[in-house]
Image (cartoon, rainbow, N blue to C red; front, side):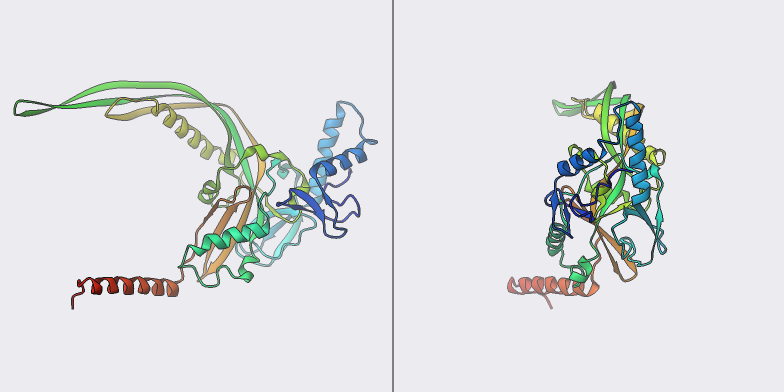
Length: 359
């Protein structure tokens, strides 16, 4: 087997990918390497072993699968059943879904090796700063929501996604109305004309995302979009160093229904948007066909924070590339009562000063 990508070139220690510098650093010898450094080192090491033949590509693919099988470690939470993936140098201390500390390691199969990945652009420190800033504008949160002990549970996770490409063609048919009102003498008239309308067209969709995790909230993942797919790069285990990665439990066929509905709806909206000049339009029939559908398995970066409050788990998520934030946040009843009490007192004072307060 070739050189493992995420081992230090100088001392052999584990490398950790740093989102702020987009480089890999070694905590043992303090060396820092660019992606080009790592790739050049690997290429030089493999130069004597690889033959320039048509079999070389297949051999390299087998090596990558072997590396993934041997170095990717899976963890299954015994409490909620979540399955995550990381490299063999990362120690999991809790489940980022339910905070359960009992995690069982096992090996993975090569089919779960992604094709592409968008590396984290936002490091942990920046993610914490953005999260705290976001929470400051929400006075009803529990007092200790952003305490240091809670922020320690902020986890960098590569979430499994399927990116779909598709050719679409379709037609919409309906009825349009043009309404005109006019007055003659003392009589006001309303004239309504009806038209049959039809639009037909084609569109190509690229990189339409659908998360491949049953436990991930689809709506939450949708809110975090869009990602800049220009940053997609070939998957390497080195990007997992210092992060988690969830294993997909819905394949491309499982999420195709969601994608198909989305593409059909979008093309229908595009075609309907070309109908102008009428008072109103009612679409009676939409027929959209998909062809040349292709999907690729990728990992996208997400910072996740889960918080348990009064027996319920709340999830906060941040796009690890753009910093976009979404979440379902808890409300402290005590702070809410105090806050609304302050508002009531302010209103009471305003009414009293204005002479509107009545006994």
